[in-house]
Image (cartoon, rainbow, N blue to C red; front, side, top):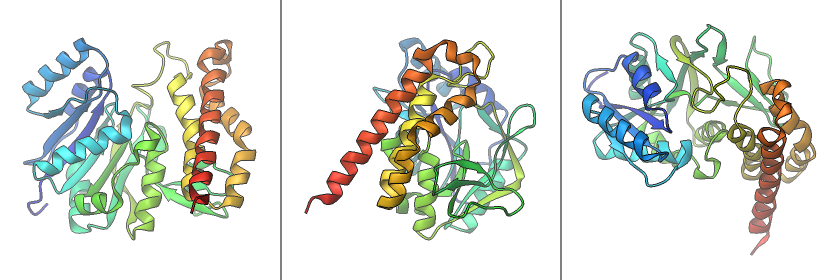
Length: 304
């Protein structure tokens, strides 16, 4: 890097120990800032994060409520910008970057202000979590891009588990969309970056290790996801459609709402279905909320 200040941005939600562990395992470039947004959970968690930030000399932002991931990252970026940072590296609290990966990512976007770059993100067991990903614009499915095979109509996206972006590009697209709260905000951001003339790239030489769902999964060690995971993944698929797709494609996505919700539920395995209040109910609520968002968007567009 040639002198631009880099900032590592983290959004915490009841997981100060994860933040401490993963930032301790992540090497920071000289002069880099760390900005942590502590979304409100409990007074004990807030005090723990306040003490940790003071000890590590992190810059702490303390919202009076839970902003969610996207709005939390927006608050972190605003604080980093206020402190003079030109390069933002977004990092999940349950992820760390190996070696001097942060410096590599930051240097890439300092050199090319129109670039948003992500590392190869692996699970702790070495399995793939994300690299170059694509969204099927006809059906709303997501998958990893492999061997050049693509959906007939697709959009490339990068996981928000770890992203580097220059302040100028971030401000050009307006950061994350607060409407998403959790999940799909990285897909939406990627699509808007591309639409604004930005470029998306995965640096396969940089590796981040992500304990996927570390802040949202149950503690019993099975595959089950949280009700929050199911609600927002189901809902925000439809929010994305309302914001980005033409009327005919939106109708196809609406018709596939129930199969899509079922597919999302299956990510947690079938054992979890013994607890419908944690699975079927949040998926149903997410479907209804997403459909209501689509209706409201259609009505807003139809007004003179």
